[in-house]
Image: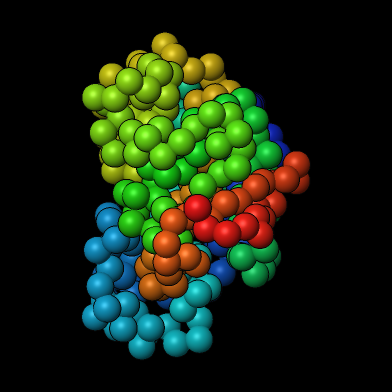
Length: 258
């Protein structure tokens, strides 16, 4: 297998192939200018989708808005996964084939569960990657949550806040390399600075690099909620805690907000 995702994360790769196959089978028109403008901004910087752009998109898509936004997410992140993993580890081809039309959301949920089951990164780094994406995409819900596993591993708010200026922080070199790779996935997937790839190869094992790439893609599903204005935090003060079980399912912990 030439693709590093298939090589190091076969379960996630199979789930991603199912998503890709279903997406290519969907008959979704993205050529309406209102949809095209929305999709373009979704890919460039989802946090800049304003009420007017969203309103025009909703007018164009009506009851299919959620389905269309899912398709936009797949179109946005499938090439990023392949290009970035291939740029760092080599072997960037992908052999997805058109399948039968299917509801994308259950397939996306399975992909996210498969990625959540990967465990070559420690819980603190996994959480920092998630928070970096949450803050870059300005997802209010994601930014308001904290991983119990990361807290149990010794992280605190000073650790989490370090993602905002990680390059100048005292975070470990491997963490900085992973966060730089995260940024490249989000902002420069097709023109990755060579130093980002070199640092990733120096400080992270190949399977860890793949997990970073897939974590960023999984977390970026928050762009769907942000784009549709459905990312409101569940708490108004402090944060809420969550756990991820062995099957990759996320559960909010019944607990008073911190």
